[in-house]
Figure 1 (cartoon, one colour):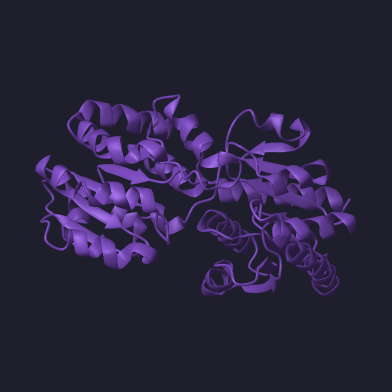
Figure 2 (cartoon, one colour; figure 1 turned 90 degrees about the horizontal axis):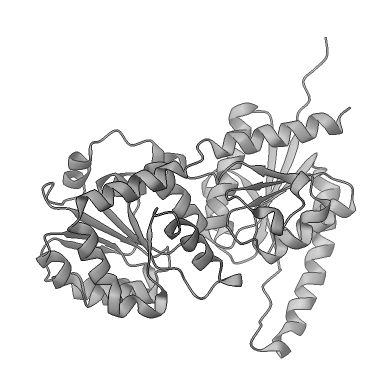
Length: 371
């Protein structure tokens, strides 16, 4: 009797939750498919994946790689030295772990790790979360066995033959909420009869969103809303002070149960990271997106524009947020039919079970390689 092959899969990337959540979701889906699969993560030293990945139950090795400083070019001598060291370490990791396949989810570490894998003839799969492809994935695309994407028209960045439209994997817990919207509001300490505005700016926070909401709390509550405000840890103290004496407002540095928060929300105000957008699509949530201007290739604006163009969200540019964000929230709260239409449009964009589709693609490549 032929014994079943035990695969070794290397997953590389990180830097932000937008890279880490999909990476962990892919790993979990691989383990569901075959519990004997060996998985090794490779991230960047001192980045959030070095904490988040072990917390999810997986081993991770850190590379000393970091991003290029585009404003202060003289600092890049150190960057190039770290890149050289990372390439050497990547080769050692491949030699020790001997993966059957390498998966790159974007972020600093995926560049040297996936490049080393390709040079060693190891098949690679790229997962591109955004509507505008990142530099690392564009550089790796020509030799990738497959590129899993979440948007149409990605052939302008990648070889068409390699593109597989799977969607972005999201945190499973976000999708597994049993409470009704009213029950979720009450569990979170809000009046179930008032519409709830959920404000999220990422784990560190978003300065512009926080400043715009901070000066508008009384306007929002006067419009009948409650506000659940994730400030991020950098702005927690300042924002909590602003919210302290305003009824129907709760400010917190981090929301532990995002699934419950999404279920309770009537309107979501957020940055336009790929993972957040995928969650909004799968949950059918009306949103106002304020794309961060401080990201590579201005990809968040392109993500938000892709939704705004089909009436699946409202986009407020970062530069306009102070003047217009609160008014857009109040206008959306006042128009239930508009919220419903946005919810329907964003739900049409959803690509469920992305993690399983990516694992299907991985297995398809591995089966071809074994022939």
